[in-house]
Image (tube, rainbow, N blue to C red; front, side):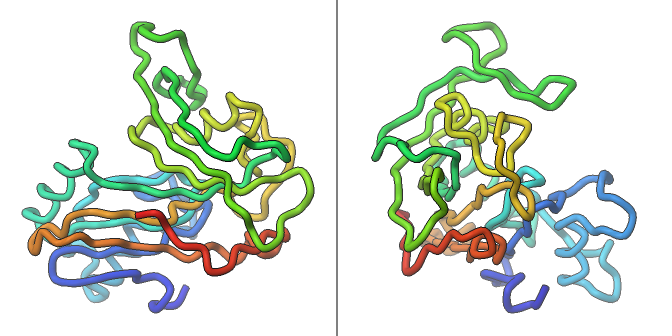
Length: 235
């Protein structure tokens, strides 16, 4: 991956990078020969001594998801950015290709979701179920330049940050995300799943000015016949 594509924004306080689908964000689960995104960030920040780099993790993306991921470069920036995610003041937009030809134009999804079980699956439960937490997402059906029959492009704005939230909520409505066999998708995808963290809007941790970060789509979307030209975020 070229540095130009990898780095979406950088200053002395924070770094926004492009995560490729199928890559672990962090941890020690990466297969031999593969690097987590955190390892790549450390290599970028301190190539001579990656372990010495300060890398503040303020949010995460599931392994099969692509898109923008923001890291703090100082402990102060990490505290301020983490606080924004905890207070839900960060605006997030995701793009998804789902198995549906009749997706509604727009609306809001509200569900109560469990934590991931030992098998890694999140489930919906009746409102108020012990251990289940409310998940809210606004959505709008987009109009792509081209898309294969039987699929739809959804733009998603989660208001909460539950595990697998968008994956579960779309599947609950008969619209699993392409490639997401864990939640009922029948169509394969070339890399990961067709869910992309398109944009983040945060308050800069030092300047306190709005910072909008946008990530380009993986090439795999075009390889399966999805073309989205000149689409703007709502952030």
